[in-house]
Length: 399
Image 1: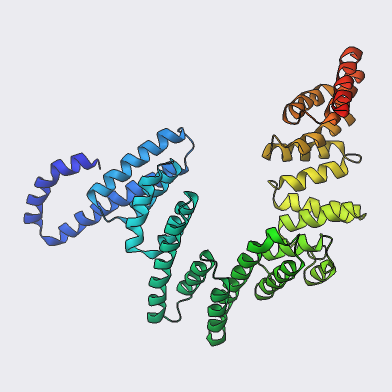
Image 2: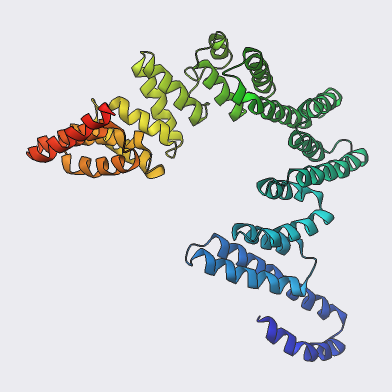
């Protein structure tokens, strides 16, 4: 029912209530609640719809949610949705104000506020919010010592504050005292996430410092030990195994995607498959890359590497994969290079020239693309253009 009509009819409904009694009043209250719920459901449907341009869609959503909040100022669902819409619309101040209101009622909104404030380079304020949330959840854990959800949130707060050791110590203590199998599993998964967050914070330094790399691998192994299904741990173990480090073999012994590709995440398969191709086992590498693309067609690196590897054996499949990679990253010159080589092998020089023009625009100082362009024009019997591009390539070489 239109809320304006509802308001106009309200005095008449009040008279009816006097005649029909309090039971009917409950029905009308339920109807009013359903109206709010219907509005919110309509908002959700509109947010997921692609029938209207985003700015139009968000404007309608803001109006509808504002109506709901005028009727029910404390409706947390409406506030949350409106804050999210403001955030997507780059109205950061409005989003922050709503998230702060929500945070006062429910501390779980620290996640939104923390990200918003860090994105705005307001680190100190973000830390303050997380510390407040941590204090409130610690108090809640004292009242509900077996509440796994609260324990997980406390660990997350410690991670956001870079207090990894404290988070792990608290969880390991809880794990020792846990008697419920489901709770144990939940704590182990959380521990794995904490150790991986700690490891990934060290990742930028592992190439230059042996001690850091050793600490990193200890943390990744701990994560894998607590949760063998942790995707980040599996990927990092594979990445490490494919690197030129002394303990690479040990990483493969711990977790080898070559032996269990069905359980491996696509990114780990892409890393291992590429490594196998480069190190001589082409057949195994192709199989791993195929599995990676099958699991996740949006893994553009796996699609490109596979296309490049099989271009001499299956041109049509290679072209399909190259198209897949470029659909996800249309300005990646390496992916363009792969497709150019495939198109030239198919003698489709016209389309290759189109890709070469794009590649040259993106990477003007790469002589390779000028030479490939010269070859395309030679094959199309346009020697003047071919010579022009050869000269450009020579000029770049000289400079």
